[in-house]
Amino acid sequence: MIIDGHAHAFGDFGKTKILIPLMDKLGVDKVVLCPGGTDPNFEFTVPKIAYKKSSMNPFFHILGNIFFLRPGHKKMPAPNNEHVFSMVQEYPNRLLQYFWIDPNAPNLITILEENYEKMSFAGIKLHQCMMKFSNKDVGMKIISQFATEKNIPIFIHLYNFKEARRFVNLAREFPKTNYIVAHMMGFETIAKKGNDLKNIYFDISTYFIISEKRIHLAMDKFGEDKVLLGTDSPIGDRCLELNMRKIQKMDITQNQKRKILGENLANLLG
Image 1: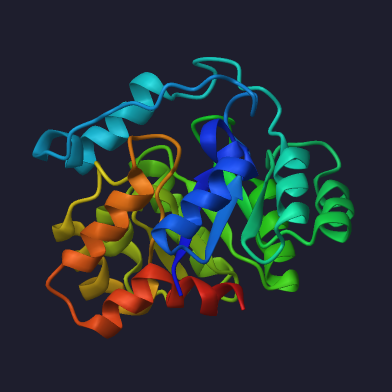
Image 2: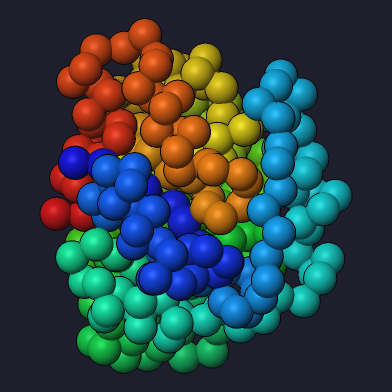
């Protein structure tokens, strides 16, 4: 089974008439969709970024957060969870939904409960660059407890090294909650402070920023069951195809490849 565990419902990935044929062509069984940071009908130009050492430097990733994606840098439209839900309703056996929410939203638990009852989403999406919050906030404890009760993971894009340390504390406080770290952001800090934790998983998107070396490090530090295929599509040219190809060409066992390409996430999501 092949599952893209991180994509966004805009551009070509916001239209089932384009996305489903692409999945069929590449042999992808399922795609997990989050709302995009833009209107799903926005005419998106896919950037072509080279796979090279400078783009794969993990410290540059954090600097990119701080200088280009810092909270309040630009106003993000309200996440279009309804659009993702409509796509999942159309292809429930091929598409899965992560519900994007602001941990500081008023009536947080009510929003989660009402939307879960309606959408039965597969996970919760959080982004510290697009919405200003800290992993020590009360809202994160509410979301973590909710995710534990519903047995769904929390998928989070971390902002900086301080928030990576706070994230480890949160994961330690809620050992029955599963967390997926987008883009392996802050991995080195997490590995140093929390490599004993069993409830942390790592998304290896986007193709051009995650090196094979870091994938090996994640496997060595946390285990082969904790690494998940993701692409951040449609951001980046042919990221789904190229990230699959990267895993298939890596010097690891066929069983490890199967786990990363889909089995790990299938087990996590039940």
